Amino acid sequence: MKKEVPTPNVLLDKTKKRKDGKCPIYISIVFNKERAKEATGLYMTEADFKKGRWKTLSVVLKRLSEIQDTIDHSKPPYNPKKLLNKGYSHTIYNIVYEKGRRQHLSELTIKNLISSCRLFEKYNIQFPNTTEDDLKWLVRKMKEDGYKIGGIATSMKNIKAVFTYADKEGYINHNPFKNYNFKGEGYKFVDNPRALTPTEVTMIIHKWDNEKTTGCGIWLFSYYFGGVSLVDIMKEDWYDINIEVFKGSRYYTKVLFRSKSNEKAHLVVQCNKYTTELLEWVRNRPWGNSPKGSFAIKCNKQLKQIDPTFTLYTARHTFCTRLVNMNIPLSQIAALMGRSPNTLATYIRKLTEESDLSRAADAIYSIEQFGF
Image: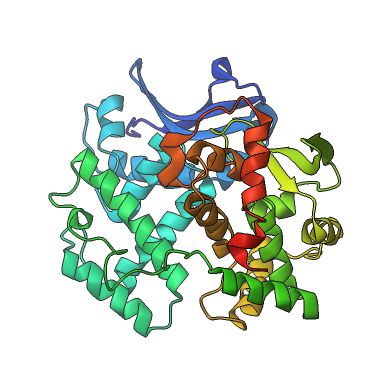
């Protein structure tokens, strides 16, 4: 006689449909009139679910396999709730999947976390008994094996997120990241961007005047246009700019959205030789169809030909630092930049007068300050 055992099922809860038409996906166990279900943190439309597209979700398939293994190794009487609660051992990979379900992480995010955690398997690092020395050794080994600095930093951030979650849930006895900062001395992967001096800004301007290199153009555009980031330069429609008049001088003004938590930010730019020339240049989309990453690398290579420390982000940092040195109120700097640096975030205030913004914009073009 065939043994009766519970079977895990995948369900779509249509009672919790979101505005985009997607419903949450659950894993359910029903046995002897007892029911237990667990959220996967994933959503899908009813049409896609009926087509069986949930079978392409690795998080769901992985969890189903874990629950089935638990059922196979359990003895009667079966309790659906207990079967879900002890569905897996606390390996680093299972912790990632649990983190993904509970925090509703995307498939791509979970995939990146898993990819970073595979370094433990590659370099034979023990989990959960990982120490600070193990992390330092891992960074040194990755450097020796030719990993790029940015890749090492991203991997360590992902691993830290997993350890932090495991420590919070009590799955590990010690979190090695509490006493180890991989951005600390000796492991500072990305140098803090510095503000360029007036002489260095002049070097970029001369390079633009003589050769019209893309890197110099984007740097100057970012600098003159409120320290706007490359992603915003490539995203915004620079044809849609209204010209208004403040106290007899002409300024470009535009509303930008730089983060979900940020309110509307004014971009106030003075009309001069370079802003008008750069605006027309950017309107022609010098990046073409290039993705942001490859285009940024190209620009940074051109800037590093002038000086190895020059990068696109120094434009934003230079813009902010110049205004701070000119004693422009921090609230006005924050308004001009759209999204203030973390050090200015607590000083953001709503401005009531446009003249304050235009006065702050004037300072960035001051000949006396820059010497050109």
